Length: 99
Image 1 (cartoon, rainbow, N blue to C red):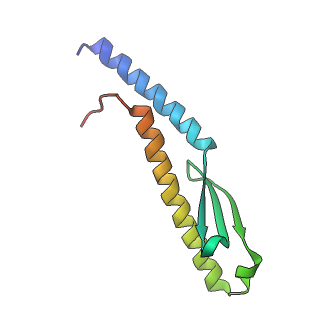
Image 2: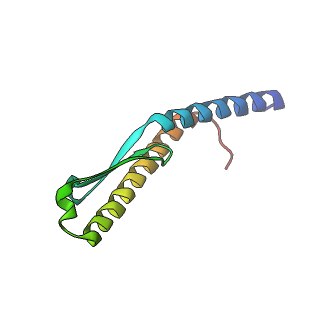
């Protein structure tokens, strides 16, 4: 493979990855906990958009709310991780990547 071809492929890959990162910024996932009593809305770049807590959960005490928020965050992060993997896999599909 000649250097010019390699540089063109690198440029194309860089452009596709940049586009994928822009898309991830506007994509959303929802992390759920306590049967949906706590919802974390997160972007595909891990930015927290909103936190929703059902008022009934507040009656269960501080530790229940803390656990629900933590579990909803973990769920949102896991979903964002999967979303990122999928979007980046699509962006790099067919591109020969170094091992």
